[in-house]
Length: 148
Length: 353
Image (cartoon, rainbow over all chains, first blue to last red; front, side, top):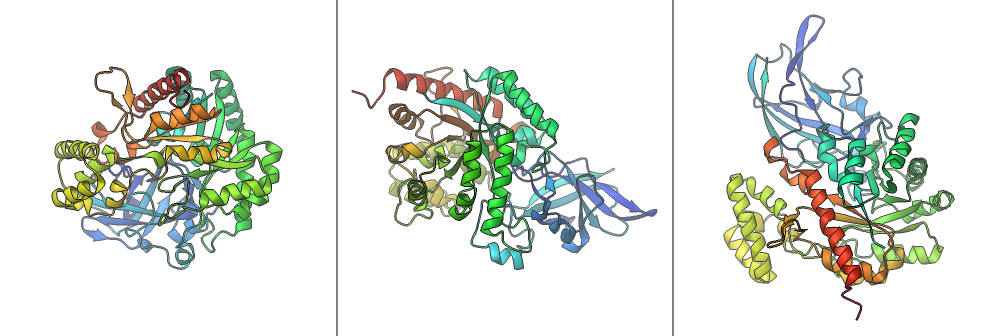
Protein backbone atom coordinates (compact mmCIF):
# COMPACT_ATOMS: atom_id res chain seq x y z
CA UNK A 1 0.00 0.00 0.00
CA UNK A 2 1.05 3.58 -0.67
CA UNK A 3 4.19 2.27 -2.36
CA UNK A 4 5.08 5.66 -3.88
CA UNK A 5 4.07 7.68 -0.83
CA UNK A 6 5.42 5.99 2.28
CA UNK A 7 8.29 8.48 2.50
CA UNK A 8 7.77 12.23 2.08
CA UNK A 9 9.99 13.27 -0.82
CA UNK A 10 11.20 16.59 0.59
CA UNK A 11 11.83 15.36 4.13
CA UNK A 12 15.43 14.14 4.04
CA UNK A 13 17.71 16.00 6.43
CA UNK A 14 20.79 15.46 8.55
CA UNK A 15 20.44 15.19 12.31
CA UNK A 16 22.64 17.26 14.61
CA UNK A 17 23.31 16.59 18.25
CA UNK A 18 25.55 18.77 20.43
CA UNK A 19 26.87 20.53 17.34
CA UNK A 20 27.78 17.31 15.56
CA UNK A 21 26.04 15.61 12.64
CA UNK A 22 25.12 12.17 13.97
CA UNK A 23 22.89 10.82 11.21
CA UNK A 24 19.96 11.56 8.94
CA UNK A 25 16.19 11.28 9.06
CA UNK A 26 13.19 11.17 6.75
CA UNK A 27 9.41 11.40 7.27
CA UNK A 28 7.13 8.40 6.89
CA UNK A 29 3.50 7.47 7.28
CA UNK A 30 2.00 4.10 8.10
CA UNK A 31 1.57 1.62 5.26
CA UNK A 32 -1.96 0.84 6.37
CA UNK A 33 -5.56 1.99 6.24
CA UNK A 34 -5.63 2.37 10.02
CA UNK A 35 -3.39 3.44 12.86
CA UNK A 36 -1.68 0.89 15.09
CA UNK A 37 -0.32 0.58 18.59
CA UNK A 38 3.31 1.69 18.61
CA UNK A 39 4.26 -1.63 20.19
CA UNK A 40 3.40 -3.29 16.89
CA UNK A 41 6.20 -1.46 15.08
CA UNK A 42 8.75 -4.20 14.55
CA UNK A 43 11.35 -2.24 12.60
CA UNK A 44 12.23 -0.81 9.22
CA UNK A 45 14.19 -2.00 6.25
CA UNK A 46 16.39 0.98 5.37
CA UNK A 47 18.82 0.94 2.47
CA UNK A 48 20.41 4.31 1.75
CA UNK A 49 22.62 4.51 -1.33
CA UNK A 50 23.23 0.77 -1.21
CA UNK A 51 23.98 0.55 2.52
CA UNK A 52 21.55 -1.44 4.67
CA UNK A 53 21.21 -0.23 8.24
CA UNK A 54 20.81 -2.42 11.34
CA UNK A 55 17.76 -2.00 13.54
CA UNK A 56 20.15 -0.87 16.29
CA UNK A 57 20.97 2.18 14.16
CA UNK A 58 17.33 3.22 13.86
CA UNK A 59 15.00 5.21 16.09
CA UNK A 60 11.50 6.53 15.50
CA UNK A 61 10.39 10.05 16.34
CA UNK A 62 6.61 10.03 16.69
CA UNK A 63 3.81 11.67 18.71
CA UNK A 64 6.02 14.62 19.66
CA UNK A 65 8.37 12.42 21.68
CA UNK A 66 12.16 12.20 21.33
CA UNK A 67 13.42 9.41 19.05
CA UNK A 68 12.81 5.95 20.51
CA UNK A 69 14.60 2.67 19.84
CA UNK A 70 12.73 -0.40 18.57
CA UNK A 71 12.95 -1.89 22.08
CA UNK A 72 11.39 1.24 23.58
CA UNK A 73 8.61 1.23 20.99
CA UNK A 74 7.82 -2.41 21.83
CA UNK A 75 6.93 -1.23 25.34
CA UNK A 76 4.50 1.48 24.14
CA UNK A 77 1.59 -0.97 24.26
CA UNK A 78 -1.18 1.62 24.73
CA UNK A 79 0.20 4.45 22.60
CA UNK A 80 -1.30 4.73 19.15
CA UNK A 81 0.34 5.89 15.95
CA UNK A 82 -2.58 7.40 14.03
CA UNK A 83 -2.84 6.85 10.27
CA UNK A 84 -2.81 10.55 9.52
CA UNK A 85 0.34 11.27 11.54
CA UNK A 86 3.82 11.53 10.19
CA UNK A 87 6.86 10.17 12.02
CA UNK A 88 10.59 10.49 11.37
CA UNK A 89 12.83 7.47 10.98
CA UNK A 90 16.20 8.52 12.41
CA UNK A 91 19.27 6.69 11.16
CA UNK A 92 22.63 6.75 12.97
CA UNK A 93 25.43 7.68 10.58
CA UNK A 94 28.22 9.82 12.02
CA UNK A 95 28.82 12.73 9.65
CA UNK A 96 25.41 12.31 8.01
CA UNK A 97 24.81 12.41 4.28
CA UNK A 98 26.31 14.63 1.60
CA UNK A 99 24.16 17.31 0.00
CA UNK A 100 22.47 16.20 -3.20
CA UNK A 101 20.65 13.15 -4.55
CA UNK A 102 20.19 9.94 -2.57
CA UNK A 103 18.39 6.68 -3.21
CA UNK A 104 16.40 5.14 -0.38
CA UNK A 105 14.97 1.63 -0.20
CA UNK A 106 12.34 1.47 2.52
CA UNK A 107 9.90 -1.07 3.89
CA UNK A 108 8.27 -0.94 7.31
CA UNK A 109 7.65 -4.10 9.31
CA UNK A 110 4.63 -4.07 11.62
CA UNK A 111 2.86 -6.79 13.58
CA UNK A 112 -0.74 -5.64 13.28
CA UNK A 113 -3.08 -8.57 12.77
CA UNK A 114 -6.57 -9.77 12.04
CA UNK A 115 -6.90 -11.74 15.27
CA UNK A 116 -5.08 -14.90 16.28
CA UNK A 117 -2.62 -16.25 13.72
CA UNK A 118 -0.62 -19.46 13.52
CA UNK A 119 2.66 -17.53 13.81
CA UNK A 120 1.71 -15.60 16.97
CA UNK A 121 3.84 -17.59 19.44
CA UNK A 122 6.77 -17.66 17.04
CA UNK A 123 6.63 -13.88 16.51
CA UNK A 124 6.77 -13.23 20.28
CA UNK A 125 10.12 -14.99 20.36
CA UNK A 126 11.39 -14.31 16.84
CA UNK A 127 9.73 -11.39 15.09
CA UNK A 128 10.21 -11.29 11.32
CA UNK A 129 13.34 -9.57 10.05
CA UNK A 130 12.31 -6.13 8.75
CA UNK A 131 12.24 -6.35 4.97
CA UNK A 132 11.10 -9.96 5.12
CA UNK A 133 7.59 -9.72 6.49
CA UNK A 134 5.02 -7.93 8.58
CA UNK A 135 2.60 -5.32 7.30
CA UNK A 136 0.52 -4.52 4.25
CA UNK A 137 3.22 -3.48 1.78
CA UNK A 138 5.12 -6.45 0.46
CA UNK A 139 7.98 -5.14 -1.60
CA UNK A 140 10.79 -2.70 -0.83
CA UNK A 141 9.82 0.74 -2.13
CA UNK A 142 12.44 3.01 -3.69
CA UNK A 143 12.61 6.77 -3.35
CA UNK A 144 14.77 9.41 -5.02
CA UNK A 145 15.43 11.99 -2.31
CA UNK A 146 17.46 15.14 -2.18
CA UNK A 147 19.34 16.55 0.78
CA UNK A 148 19.30 20.32 0.53
CA UNK B 1 -35.89 -2.25 3.17
CA UNK B 2 -32.30 -2.30 2.05
CA UNK B 3 -30.47 0.73 3.39
CA UNK B 4 -27.30 2.19 1.94
CA UNK B 5 -24.29 3.45 3.83
CA UNK B 6 -20.56 4.00 3.44
CA UNK B 7 -17.66 2.61 5.36
CA UNK B 8 -15.24 5.51 5.67
CA UNK B 9 -12.63 2.86 4.86
CA UNK B 10 -13.53 3.84 1.29
CA UNK B 11 -11.88 7.23 1.82
CA UNK B 12 -8.68 5.91 3.42
CA UNK B 13 -6.44 7.45 0.76
CA UNK B 14 -7.96 10.87 1.41
CA UNK B 15 -7.28 10.33 5.12
CA UNK B 16 -3.68 9.38 4.39
CA UNK B 17 -3.10 12.50 2.28
CA UNK B 18 -5.17 14.75 4.59
CA UNK B 19 -7.43 15.74 1.69
CA UNK B 20 -10.58 14.72 3.59
CA UNK B 21 -11.36 14.11 7.24
CA UNK B 22 -14.35 12.35 8.73
CA UNK B 23 -16.41 15.55 8.73
CA UNK B 24 -15.79 16.06 5.00
CA UNK B 25 -16.74 12.43 4.48
CA UNK B 26 -20.01 12.87 6.41
CA UNK B 27 -20.93 15.79 4.16
CA UNK B 28 -20.11 13.77 1.05
CA UNK B 29 -22.24 10.79 2.16
CA UNK B 30 -25.17 12.96 3.16
CA UNK B 31 -25.26 15.14 0.08
CA UNK B 32 -24.01 13.18 -2.93
CA UNK B 33 -25.09 9.57 -2.57
CA UNK B 34 -28.73 9.40 -3.60
CA UNK B 35 -30.10 9.30 -0.06
CA UNK B 36 -27.53 7.08 1.67
CA UNK B 37 -27.57 7.68 5.41
CA UNK B 38 -25.36 5.04 7.05
CA UNK B 39 -21.85 5.46 8.41
CA UNK B 40 -19.42 2.67 9.15
CA UNK B 41 -15.93 3.35 10.44
CA UNK B 42 -12.60 1.72 11.03
CA UNK B 43 -12.14 2.46 14.73
CA UNK B 44 -8.39 2.86 14.45
CA UNK B 45 -8.62 5.22 11.50
CA UNK B 46 -11.44 7.59 12.33
CA UNK B 47 -11.14 7.87 16.12
CA UNK B 48 -8.33 10.28 17.01
CA UNK B 49 -5.88 9.00 19.62
CA UNK B 50 -7.64 5.65 19.74
CA UNK B 51 -8.38 4.06 22.16
CA UNK B 52 -8.53 7.23 24.27
CA UNK B 53 -10.25 9.93 22.18
CA UNK B 54 -10.91 13.27 23.84
CA UNK B 55 -14.47 13.89 25.03
CA UNK B 56 -14.66 16.74 22.55
CA UNK B 57 -14.45 14.20 19.74
CA UNK B 58 -17.44 12.25 21.05
CA UNK B 59 -19.43 15.48 21.26
CA UNK B 60 -18.36 16.45 17.73
CA UNK B 61 -19.25 13.02 16.41
CA UNK B 62 -22.76 13.08 17.84
CA UNK B 63 -23.25 16.62 16.65
CA UNK B 64 -22.17 15.90 13.06
CA UNK B 65 -24.41 12.81 12.86
CA UNK B 66 -27.36 14.97 13.87
CA UNK B 67 -26.33 17.79 11.54
CA UNK B 68 -26.38 15.56 8.46
CA UNK B 69 -29.10 13.13 9.51
CA UNK B 70 -26.73 10.18 9.43
CA UNK B 71 -26.79 6.93 11.41
CA UNK B 72 -23.82 5.28 13.09
CA UNK B 73 -24.28 1.80 11.66
CA UNK B 74 -21.15 -0.23 12.34
CA UNK B 75 -17.80 0.27 14.03
CA UNK B 76 -15.12 -2.09 12.71
CA UNK B 77 -12.66 -3.24 15.35
CA UNK B 78 -9.37 -5.10 15.20
CA UNK B 79 -7.60 -7.62 17.34
CA UNK B 80 -3.85 -7.21 17.49
CA UNK B 81 -2.93 -10.34 19.37
CA UNK B 82 0.69 -9.19 19.73
CA UNK B 83 -0.15 -5.77 21.14
CA UNK B 84 1.65 -6.60 24.40
CA UNK B 85 4.63 -8.03 22.50
CA UNK B 86 5.93 -10.13 25.42
CA UNK B 87 3.05 -12.62 25.13
CA UNK B 88 0.16 -13.53 22.87
CA UNK B 89 -3.01 -11.87 24.11
CA UNK B 90 -5.05 -14.26 26.25
CA UNK B 91 -8.74 -14.82 25.57
CA UNK B 92 -9.58 -12.92 28.77
CA UNK B 93 -7.43 -9.99 27.63
CA UNK B 94 -9.18 -10.13 24.27
CA UNK B 95 -12.51 -9.87 26.09
CA UNK B 96 -11.21 -6.79 27.93
CA UNK B 97 -10.32 -5.18 24.59
CA UNK B 98 -13.81 -5.99 23.28
CA UNK B 99 -15.40 -4.43 26.37
CA UNK B 100 -13.42 -1.28 25.83
CA UNK B 101 -14.44 -1.13 22.17
CA UNK B 102 -18.09 -1.70 23.13
CA UNK B 103 -17.85 1.28 25.47
CA UNK B 104 -16.53 3.43 22.64
CA UNK B 105 -19.14 2.14 20.17
CA UNK B 106 -21.85 2.92 22.72
CA UNK B 107 -20.58 6.46 23.29
CA UNK B 108 -20.57 7.01 19.54
CA UNK B 109 -24.06 5.58 19.06
CA UNK B 110 -23.21 2.56 16.93
CA UNK B 111 -25.79 -0.17 16.29
CA UNK B 112 -23.25 -2.85 15.33
CA UNK B 113 -19.64 -3.63 16.10
CA UNK B 114 -17.71 -5.76 13.65
CA UNK B 115 -15.16 -8.11 15.17
CA UNK B 116 -12.15 -9.64 13.50
CA UNK B 117 -12.92 -13.07 12.13
CA UNK B 118 -10.46 -14.75 14.47
CA UNK B 119 -11.99 -13.54 17.73
CA UNK B 120 -12.56 -16.65 19.88
CA UNK B 121 -16.15 -17.32 20.89
CA UNK B 122 -14.90 -17.76 24.46
CA UNK B 123 -14.01 -14.04 24.46
CA UNK B 124 -17.29 -13.11 22.76
CA UNK B 125 -19.23 -14.98 25.43
CA UNK B 126 -17.49 -12.96 28.15
CA UNK B 127 -18.87 -9.69 26.73
CA UNK B 128 -22.37 -10.72 25.61
CA UNK B 129 -23.88 -9.11 28.72
CA UNK B 130 -22.31 -5.76 27.95
CA UNK B 131 -23.37 -5.91 24.30
CA UNK B 132 -26.89 -6.65 25.46
CA UNK B 133 -26.83 -3.80 27.96
CA UNK B 134 -25.88 -1.35 25.21
CA UNK B 135 -27.94 -3.18 22.57
CA UNK B 136 -24.96 -3.38 20.23
CA UNK B 137 -24.85 -6.33 17.84
CA UNK B 138 -21.38 -7.78 17.40
CA UNK B 139 -20.74 -9.27 13.98
CA UNK B 140 -18.26 -11.72 12.60
CA UNK B 141 -17.29 -10.79 9.08
CA UNK B 142 -17.54 -13.47 6.39
CA UNK B 143 -14.62 -12.42 4.24
CA UNK B 144 -13.21 -14.03 1.09
CA UNK B 145 -12.02 -16.69 0.66
CA UNK B 146 -14.32 -17.93 3.40
CA UNK B 147 -17.52 -19.50 2.12
CA UNK B 148 -20.92 -19.36 3.81
CA UNK B 149 -21.40 -23.10 3.62
CA UNK B 150 -18.40 -25.32 4.41
CA UNK B 151 -16.50 -26.29 1.31
CA UNK B 152 -13.98 -29.04 1.14
CA UNK B 153 -10.42 -27.80 1.25
CA UNK B 154 -11.26 -24.22 2.16
CA UNK B 155 -9.83 -22.73 5.33
CA UNK B 156 -12.34 -21.14 7.70
CA UNK B 157 -15.08 -23.16 6.02
CA UNK B 158 -16.49 -24.10 9.39
CA UNK B 159 -16.64 -20.60 10.86
CA UNK B 160 -20.17 -19.73 9.82
CA UNK B 161 -21.50 -23.07 11.08
CA UNK B 162 -19.63 -22.50 14.35
CA UNK B 163 -21.15 -19.03 14.72
CA UNK B 164 -24.68 -20.17 13.94
CA UNK B 165 -24.37 -22.99 16.49
CA UNK B 166 -23.15 -20.45 19.08
CA UNK B 167 -26.04 -18.08 18.35
CA UNK B 168 -28.55 -20.90 18.62
CA UNK B 169 -26.98 -22.27 21.83
CA UNK B 170 -26.88 -18.91 23.61
CA UNK B 171 -30.03 -17.50 22.04
CA UNK B 172 -28.18 -14.19 21.75
CA UNK B 173 -29.46 -11.36 19.58
CA UNK B 174 -26.16 -9.54 19.99
CA UNK B 175 -23.82 -11.65 17.91
CA UNK B 176 -24.34 -12.27 14.22
CA UNK B 177 -22.80 -12.21 10.77
CA UNK B 178 -21.54 -9.57 8.39
CA UNK B 179 -20.98 -10.92 4.87
CA UNK B 180 -18.47 -9.05 2.74
CA UNK B 181 -19.44 -8.78 -0.94
CA UNK B 182 -15.95 -10.09 -1.73
CA UNK B 183 -17.26 -13.61 -1.13
CA UNK B 184 -19.40 -13.08 -4.24
CA UNK B 185 -16.48 -11.99 -6.39
CA UNK B 186 -16.73 -14.34 -9.38
CA UNK B 187 -13.74 -13.11 -11.35
CA UNK B 188 -10.61 -11.13 -10.55
CA UNK B 189 -10.64 -7.37 -10.40
CA UNK B 190 -8.78 -5.57 -13.14
CA UNK B 191 -6.91 -3.12 -10.93
CA UNK B 192 -5.17 -5.87 -9.00
CA UNK B 193 -4.08 -7.62 -12.19
CA UNK B 194 -2.75 -4.35 -13.59
CA UNK B 195 -0.81 -3.70 -10.35
CA UNK B 196 0.89 -7.08 -10.59
CA UNK B 197 1.69 -6.58 -14.26
CA UNK B 198 3.26 -3.16 -13.64
CA UNK B 199 6.05 -4.88 -11.73
CA UNK B 200 7.46 -5.98 -15.09
CA UNK B 201 5.97 -3.63 -17.71
CA UNK B 202 4.76 -0.10 -18.44
CA UNK B 203 1.46 1.28 -17.21
CA UNK B 204 0.11 1.43 -20.76
CA UNK B 205 0.91 -2.23 -21.43
CA UNK B 206 -0.44 -3.28 -18.03
CA UNK B 207 -3.72 -1.47 -18.71
CA UNK B 208 -4.10 -3.09 -22.11
CA UNK B 209 -3.20 -6.60 -20.98
CA UNK B 210 -5.29 -6.47 -17.81
CA UNK B 211 -8.32 -5.63 -19.98
CA UNK B 212 -7.51 -8.53 -22.23
CA UNK B 213 -7.18 -10.94 -19.31
CA UNK B 214 -10.52 -9.83 -17.84
CA UNK B 215 -12.13 -10.26 -21.24
CA UNK B 216 -10.88 -13.85 -21.30
CA UNK B 217 -12.64 -14.54 -18.01
CA UNK B 218 -15.92 -13.77 -19.76
CA UNK B 219 -15.15 -16.01 -22.69
CA UNK B 220 -13.31 -19.06 -21.41
CA UNK B 221 -13.87 -21.74 -18.79
CA UNK B 222 -11.39 -21.85 -15.91
CA UNK B 223 -9.31 -24.79 -17.16
CA UNK B 224 -8.77 -23.26 -20.62
CA UNK B 225 -8.08 -19.93 -19.00
CA UNK B 226 -5.46 -21.42 -16.69
CA UNK B 227 -3.70 -23.06 -19.64
CA UNK B 228 -3.90 -19.84 -21.68
CA UNK B 229 -2.65 -17.70 -18.78
CA UNK B 230 0.26 -19.98 -17.92
CA UNK B 231 1.38 -19.96 -21.54
CA UNK B 232 1.03 -16.23 -22.19
CA UNK B 233 1.56 -14.59 -18.79
CA UNK B 234 3.42 -17.15 -16.69
CA UNK B 235 4.75 -14.65 -14.13
CA UNK B 236 1.17 -13.74 -13.22
CA UNK B 237 -0.56 -17.09 -13.64
CA UNK B 238 2.17 -19.01 -11.85
CA UNK B 239 2.52 -16.48 -9.01
CA UNK B 240 0.96 -16.66 -5.56
CA UNK B 241 -1.87 -14.60 -7.05
CA UNK B 242 -2.82 -17.35 -9.46
CA UNK B 243 -5.05 -19.20 -7.02
CA UNK B 244 -6.87 -15.95 -6.26
CA UNK B 245 -7.27 -15.11 -9.95
CA UNK B 246 -8.81 -18.44 -10.79
CA UNK B 247 -10.77 -19.02 -7.60
CA UNK B 248 -14.22 -17.75 -8.51
CA UNK B 249 -16.75 -16.75 -5.88
CA UNK B 250 -16.27 -18.39 -2.50
CA UNK B 251 -20.00 -18.27 -1.69
CA UNK B 252 -23.17 -18.69 -3.71
CA UNK B 253 -25.66 -15.80 -3.35
CA UNK B 254 -28.36 -18.40 -2.67
CA UNK B 255 -26.48 -19.38 0.51
CA UNK B 256 -27.73 -16.10 1.99
CA UNK B 257 -31.08 -17.80 2.56
CA UNK B 258 -29.45 -20.10 5.13
CA UNK B 259 -27.96 -17.36 7.29
CA UNK B 260 -30.45 -14.58 6.73
CA UNK B 261 -31.74 -14.26 10.33
CA UNK B 262 -28.19 -13.64 11.55
CA UNK B 263 -27.11 -10.97 9.05
CA UNK B 264 -26.84 -7.60 10.76
CA UNK B 265 -24.78 -5.67 8.22
CA UNK B 266 -23.15 -6.18 4.82
CA UNK B 267 -19.86 -4.86 3.49
CA UNK B 268 -20.30 -3.55 -0.04
CA UNK B 269 -16.74 -4.37 -1.11
CA UNK B 270 -15.78 -3.15 -4.58
CA UNK B 271 -12.66 -2.46 -6.64
CA UNK B 272 -13.64 -0.54 -9.76
CA UNK B 273 -16.89 0.94 -11.05
CA UNK B 274 -17.10 1.13 -14.83
CA UNK B 275 -19.79 2.63 -17.02
CA UNK B 276 -22.19 0.10 -18.50
CA UNK B 277 -21.78 0.15 -22.30
CA UNK B 278 -24.76 1.92 -23.86
CA UNK B 279 -26.03 3.24 -20.52
CA UNK B 280 -24.39 6.60 -19.81
CA UNK B 281 -24.38 7.43 -16.10
CA UNK B 282 -25.00 3.84 -15.06
CA UNK B 283 -22.18 1.89 -13.50
CA UNK B 284 -21.31 -1.69 -12.62
CA UNK B 285 -18.76 -3.64 -10.57
CA UNK B 286 -17.92 -6.32 -13.09
CA UNK B 287 -16.12 -8.67 -10.75
CA UNK B 288 -18.97 -9.17 -8.28
CA UNK B 289 -22.48 -10.55 -8.26
CA UNK B 290 -24.24 -7.40 -7.05
CA UNK B 291 -27.46 -7.80 -9.11
CA UNK B 292 -27.98 -11.35 -7.86
CA UNK B 293 -27.21 -10.54 -4.22
CA UNK B 294 -29.40 -7.44 -4.11
CA UNK B 295 -32.30 -9.31 -5.73
CA UNK B 296 -32.02 -12.03 -3.07
CA UNK B 297 -31.73 -9.57 -0.19
CA UNK B 298 -34.76 -7.75 -1.50
CA UNK B 299 -36.69 -11.01 -1.76
CA UNK B 300 -35.73 -11.87 1.80
CA UNK B 301 -36.86 -8.47 3.03
CA UNK B 302 -33.41 -7.55 4.34
CA UNK B 303 -33.87 -4.55 6.61
CA UNK B 304 -30.29 -3.49 7.11
CA UNK B 305 -27.37 -1.68 5.55
CA UNK B 306 -25.00 -2.39 2.72
CA UNK B 307 -22.01 -0.16 3.40
CA UNK B 308 -19.68 0.68 0.52
CA UNK B 309 -16.20 -0.59 1.08
CA UNK B 310 -14.00 0.66 -1.75
CA UNK B 311 -10.67 -1.12 -1.93
CA UNK B 312 -9.36 -0.43 -5.42
CA UNK B 313 -7.09 2.41 -4.33
CA UNK B 314 -4.64 0.01 -2.72
CA UNK B 315 -3.60 -1.41 -6.10
CA UNK B 316 -3.04 1.99 -7.71
CA UNK B 317 -0.66 3.74 -5.32
CA UNK B 318 2.54 2.78 -7.08
CA UNK B 319 2.34 5.35 -9.91
CA UNK B 320 2.55 8.82 -8.40
CA UNK B 321 -0.18 11.35 -7.73
CA UNK B 322 -1.49 11.34 -11.29
CA UNK B 323 -2.20 7.61 -11.11
CA UNK B 324 -4.27 7.73 -7.91
CA UNK B 325 -7.92 6.80 -8.30
CA UNK B 326 -10.70 9.11 -7.15
CA UNK B 327 -12.32 7.50 -4.11
CA UNK B 328 -15.15 10.02 -3.96
CA UNK B 329 -16.15 9.35 -7.57
CA UNK B 330 -15.89 5.57 -7.14
CA UNK B 331 -18.23 5.63 -4.12
CA UNK B 332 -20.70 7.90 -5.96
CA UNK B 333 -20.79 5.39 -8.82
CA UNK B 334 -21.22 2.52 -6.39
CA UNK B 335 -24.27 4.19 -4.90
CA UNK B 336 -25.71 4.96 -8.33
CA UNK B 337 -25.53 1.20 -8.96
CA UNK B 338 -26.87 0.13 -5.58
CA UNK B 339 -29.75 2.62 -5.60
CA UNK B 340 -30.74 1.48 -9.10
CA UNK B 341 -30.48 -2.24 -8.28
CA UNK B 342 -32.47 -1.82 -5.06
CA UNK B 343 -35.17 0.15 -6.84
CA UNK B 344 -35.40 -2.38 -9.66
CA UNK B 345 -35.46 -5.32 -7.29
CA UNK B 346 -38.38 -3.93 -5.33
CA UNK B 347 -40.28 -3.16 -8.54
CA UNK B 348 -39.62 -6.44 -10.25
CA UNK B 349 -38.20 -9.08 -8.00
CA UNK B 350 -36.56 -11.95 -9.82
CA UNK B 351 -37.80 -14.39 -7.24
CA UNK B 352 -41.42 -13.35 -7.00
CA UNK B 353 -43.69 -14.88 -9.61
